Length: 211
Ligand SMILES: Cc1cc2nc3c(=O)[nH]c(=O)nc-3n(C[C@H](O)[C@H](O)[C@H](O)COP(=O)(O)OP(=O)(O)OC[C@H]3O[C@@H](n4cnc5c(N)ncnc54)[C@H](O)[C@@H]3O)c2cc1C
Image (tube, rainbow, N blue to C red; front, side, top):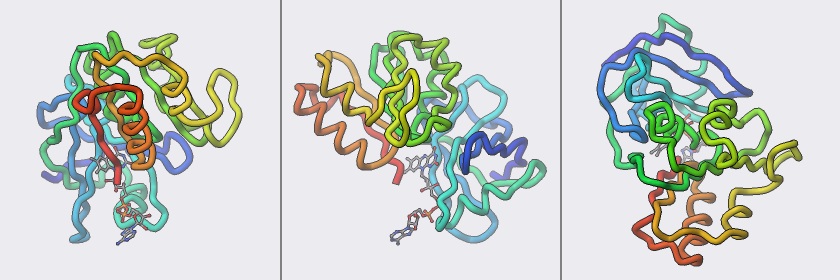
């Protein structure tokens, strides 16, 4: 359906939070497809808001040479986007789990947090720049010492310099819980291999790659 844009704010360099009115129920972690009136195929985005929130939000970054995101970023409130019904099988539960994200791959986990699923969770968030730790205040409040930040491009107080892999390589990892991976393909593939090498059953690894 075609939905009016309520907000489309740049929350960090080239990264936007788009809000429309929520029209459907969804499960935290699911995605929608977004398109414009330009005839191009829609792109997939994780929902980045809670399943009881009045607004449905999307966190996206501009791909400079991309077909959709440079145009999407120019839209103002009052403009509109085409949006599909929610779908997808990357779905959070209330069971203990480790959530691992790079960049805007934090979006489905933020939806899970806003939907009340953050209890018994550990979050690892890897980014390049310090201003890419989206929603860090909320994460700190919800998870406290179970919120771990990794910054590969700069040295920042309170974060580990490097990738999320560091944490996983250095610890005993419980095999009886799910590991959710979301974001860049390289991270998802490397971390999946690392988890398997450390004895995590394949069935306990749930992956959403942003390609
Ligand atoms: C399940 C899922 C969930 C996602 N959720 C999010 C999300 O929450 N937030 C988010 O920011 N993104 C998300 N993505 C990525 C998103 O769907 C888009 O791919 C992204 O926003 C880029 O869209 P675009 O149209 O601007 O770029 P595109 O036109 O798709 O181009 C993307 C990149 O691919 C290159 N490219 C395009 N065509 C080719 C080609 N034929 N050969 C080689 N290279 C090519 C372009 O140069 C560009 O660098 C998700 C993807 C998936 C699969």
